[in-house]
Image 1: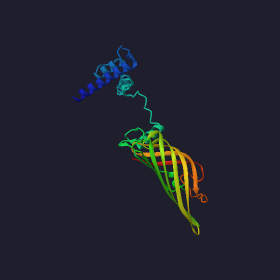
Image 2: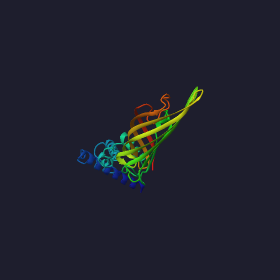
Image 3: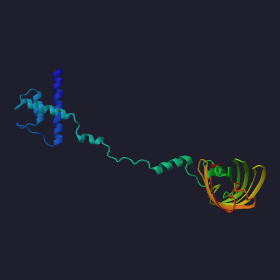
Image 4: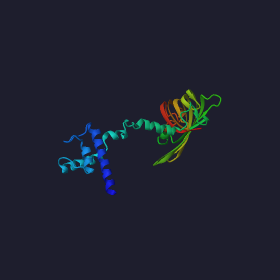
Length: 270
């Protein structure tokens, strides 16, 4: 029983090998008796007496069986991916994606609008001022409810400078208004005046008080993301109108004596 089964399997393998050889070569290999090699091998397995060298025929039949176990290239082409690989995300696109995530998932809103409605308040701080002598500072923009292209501006700061022989403490307050040439509700291109007052005291072997009044004009741009994250950049021109000018470390929001200035802002809107 097992011998018959083995013989049948061997015949099937030889048939497959012969078919593969015919498909791969285009024509079957003919022997001296006019029969293809596959048919001669089948006859050998079935016990028929072959013509010629039996040992050589067995060797060739064994090679044919081994060849039948290799899948022809034509049969594997269907599993080969022919589409070109997709291009990876560029560095610029990656930063753009990160920027959209930072700006919120709701998508870009019209100027001065958040996911929950129009913006009324924007609170910002100048991060450079914390380390450049301006000190801890904050600026609040408040949109006028009945005219959203106009915003009131309030400013405040505090700084304390320590030295080996004394210290200087300064406070500053400022006020102004912004008209949004492009935009509304605290967002867009803005222009407006500023007035500031600064006062403080120095202690270098004795306490001395001083004050200063400043005026300036400012042009800037405010950005508000849909999740409320806000930023600004502005430049202006102004300086001291009255008050002390001896202590140059005690600067107003206008930057001391008359001249240009730059500010940056980071904050939140609601």
